Length: 435
Length: 56
Image (cartoon, rainbow over all chains, first blue to last red; front, side, top):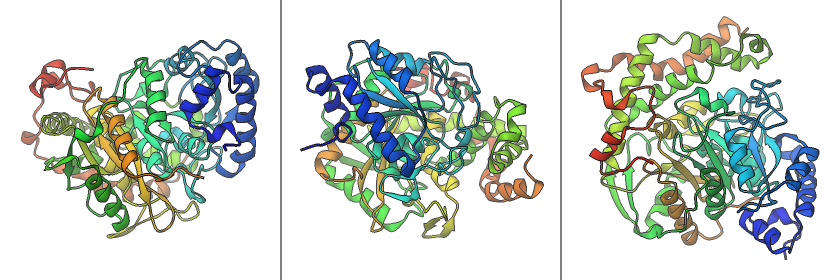
């Protein structure tokens, strides 16, 4: 018997409210109490605003998420709070961002703003004015980034669904580390106003759920369309060995490979000839785009590491940026060609499990390494191409930390990714959901 | 602002990877007007059609 409504899935929360089994007001109060109880451990939320949430509930529309609490990353403006992007102050005026409007139209109640890596400039979630977000499976380890708070809030059962963002893996990477489902949407698939990612050609909102069905519900709300479940067993999976299956923690590699085999799906080995250039091309673009709109007077307030990243971005030669765009164009065409042969591309979401907060170093077969570059290598090709991608939990490492498998799909093929995620879940019962 | 030492440390971490772009042969990465490189993160309908896909 479930004793707390936040231990219900997002869809069961919605059904319970719709049927009157649980009052939306009681659900909101219980959610706020759960956040108060658990957030000191996980540091997933930067802010709550009970008065505004109750006002939102009183005006909640009928819809798939009517009366159900969710959180949003600090990259989306709300009518009472401009986005801060993980910094000390608002970087945009208050207002109803496109994401807020879609959530409101679905009837959802925004109950908090998620902690995040400052300006989205990192994959660990460690650098934030609010301090690091902690992993739902082991709070001594990183939740990931940059949408680490969004992943941790869902994984630690503070909310059933959250909205993050993904400019270089920032939804898929923390989902993989935190043992939840994270879906990056297709670039430009919903309104970008009031979203800090509107400054970047790489950025797209993403959604988090504890499983594929909850992620589907969140994605349907944001995309304002229904996506009935299809058959994930008939999908063709493309495996690109180099570079995405190279220098991966052996347990991560084995769990991801076993999950693909277990699906029974048709598998084809593919080559993306220039894929090893995705990380530099994406890194160059991201470093410039994610910092270009930061007001100069905010710079002294930022973490020293963020300031250093901005200073490094300012040194990126224009010639290199032009070269990155040439690589990007080629990569986009190569990805389109791959999708004539397969429905999905698959490789590990992260090269290794979440590192300790106190010592954020990945232990790879090649040796110890800081996480951002190897994480970027796994993720940023989807941002360069603008395609959707999902991270699905497929097992646990011997350390107890989650392992995620990443699947990429065609432009607009969010439903296909969710079908695949639910197919994987059927075959791998009991994988994550923490705590 | 960040010290030169810190920026140099960051550069030392990133540059070995980023510098791969400096060595590419541009002939292998032609400008493709329909892709609008750097500004349109999804291919045009024409490019998608070559892959049998429809724009979202």
